[in-house]
Length: 152
Length: 151
Image (cartoon, rainbow over all chains, first blue to last red; front, side, top):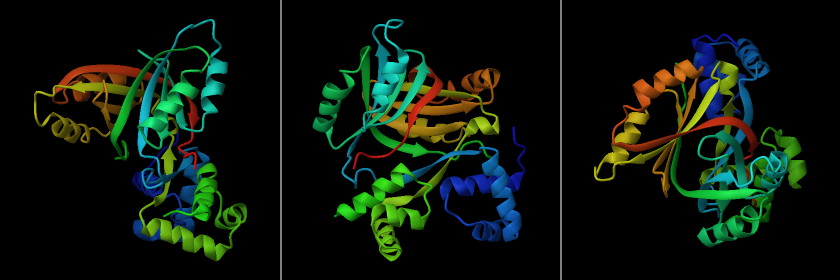
């Protein structure tokens, strides 16, 4: 595990907000020279501190007014291959994220749709036809807040 | 309104958010100056908020990730506001989502290990106000993680 000091933590917070921020600009904010800041960023990236870059958009402005979280329970555990289910569910364009979880459900899906009737179409034609799908639990997202996390 | 060029640019950016400006312009079939102008306009109109680095908390020593589905006591008129304000005070809470459905609020929580999670759960999470019911889903693996839109 990578050891971090306060400056590293401040850099991680800043890059989580704006992944395109330059070493020069970040260095100025933190009182580091551009090369020193660049070296720190390189070290953080090489340690795998960031697993991806996410494009943050207003989904409603782009015509996707509905986000639904679906809990999926597989009906025939043991008989249906998890790989088949995972491959099929990942191929659905409206399904943004698929998490394998332990608990009341086997999978947790984040699904986007233009509106509720579009969601119904995705649910009936795409999700309910997936191999092995059993119980479904749908919750419509009303608001979402991402927090900075434990970075001191 | 967005036109086809805007949609094409956004689609390519969503597919590969790390792509540099030159490669992106080429992929979307526009000049570098058109790309810059379009991105500026999308930002100004509030469609594009920015590019965020997604932290891999495992790389920082947080091995446990739990999704807590909470039902609130809705006889308390300020249950939502007070619960959410208190949840914001817990640094290990990464996401707070509110829902229409069986679940009222969902918290995404990380912990260093199970002992740390147990301590957080008992001391910081179960003590949050107005909880009527709480259910935990333990994260096992991320199968797909692409918050792209089918534009």
